[in-house]
Image (cartoon, rainbow, N blue to C red; front, side):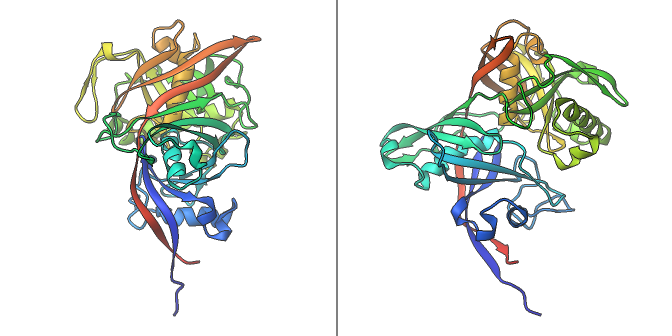
Length: 393
């Protein structure tokens, strides 16, 4: 019996923030995968090694976590005032499913450097030394991201002394600006889709919960840690080793998604795993991170823990950090109240791996809250480049 040989697809494996992903140039994908559809999804699933009932991704490039089972497709942009289009695919681990419903804020930090190294920018735009501004169109959510990428001797600089909690080694800092982060597209409407800063969710088995439902960076549901029996200092194993806890958060996520208008029926949540996110917040407190580092109450403004693809994230998703910064800037949200209330242009929050600062400025325009920009820093580093091999179809 004959079998088709493997095919080679040019690819680059990159760490961006606290995530890792396989990056592709659109025009270097197999022709059938250059347009959205089954062929593209099947290719990316096989690259990552999904679906894997063993949950290990032994036969693929994925890392068997939501942070490391990611794919990115980049192309030169035809949009005015943009350099590249960036499309993100979150690959499920144990299901044959690629979720295209949201962005990855962490991998956003790697898009600019990838674009420069692949020659997608006009050479006149790339300085010999200094910061190169890359204007990115985030195609999943229809938003602009501006990346400020360090360049040394005409090459992307990846090494440096910028430390990011959740990443083992220091690297060069990449500054990101998420422009108009509130989602006003077809998927969610206004920043606060219900028109309220705080809503009430009636979740079976839990009862009525206060929740801030926000479209900023990524659709996110914020609840108070104290209302669901937590302190906000939890590490991964406390949540991820408990089937009851995971079921609780999925129920909150499903009911919140309906309330936000992202899905019509609870059953639809299974086919929308990447969004919305669920996070729980609490006032600042002392705690010890997953690496053993002590975080003191005076180091942070609040505590935040967030779920990603059904598990507690080991640090914080970049898009969720945008949601945190945006919500913190609006007086009266649960995030703002956990941080002490009042007017805020930035917050430092504690997550399982350490702390992170994110900034955003909110204003009211005709009675509606508007945030023009959210800002944070990440780092990125190429881990491997060449070709990824997948069995031919």
